[in-house]
Image (cartoon, rainbow, N blue to C red; front, side):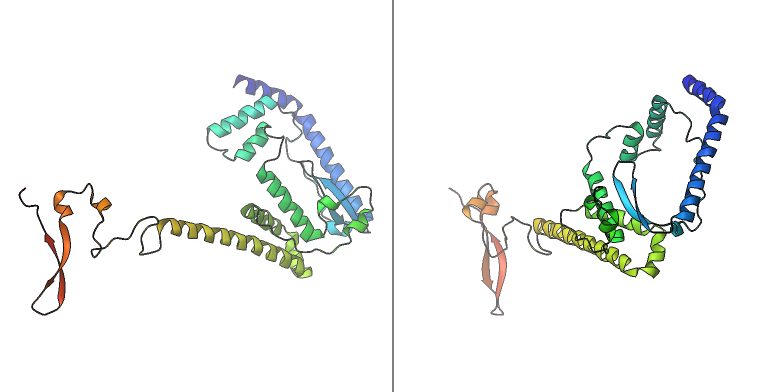
Length: 281
C-alpha cells in the first residue's frame, strides 16, 4: 500500500504534462481526419493492424467520415504505468472476484501471449470470414507486392461452413459484427450483404442442431427406448421361468415357485402362483 501512495504522488507531479500531451495527440488526430475528409475524394484501400499484429484492409474515402473528425483521448492513458503495480492490481481484482474472465486476466498479466489457443484461432478465422462477406477480400489473399485495387475488385460471396468449425464462437463473432452501426445502413443500401451473413449463421445453427440431435439420440440409446428395457438388460416376464443359471443363488422357496394354469369353473384358464416346498429327505 505504501508503494501505491508513492506512485500516486509521483503521478500527481507529472499529471499536468501528461494532460497536455493527451490534448496535443487528440488535436493532431482530429486535424489528420479533417485533411482526410477534405482531400480523400477518390476511394482507396487502407491497411491497418490490430493489437494482435494481424492486419485488415478496407476501402475508404473522405466522405465516409461524414465530418466526424473529433478525436478524444482517454484521460490518464499517457501516464507511465508500473508493470508490477498493474499486475498486483489485477491479482487483487481476481481475489475479490471482480475479474473472472480467464482470457482478460492473461492479457492484463501479460502471460500466455505466445502460441495462439484454439479459441483465438477460431475468432481470427471468423473475423476473416466477416471481412470476406463484407468486403469480398479474405486477408490471406492480400499480397503487398501486388496492386491493392485489383485485389479488392471482388464481390462479397458466401463463405462455406465446415463441420469442424467452432460454431458457437463463430456465431458470436458474426453476430457482434452485425451489431456495428454501419450494418444498419447496409440493410438499406446493400441488403445482399446481410443476407450472406444470415445464411452463413443459419448454416452454423444447422450444424449445432445436428450435433445436439446426435447427442440426444446417443443418450436415449444408452438409457433405452421410452417404456422399454435399458440397453444390455434381458427381458423377463412371468411366463418364462428362470433358467438354471439365474436360479442359482436364490432362496429355496423362490426356486420351487412356478406358474401353473389352474382351471376354474368358468372353463377359462387362469394363471395363479403355487409355492411348492421341499419335502422331507
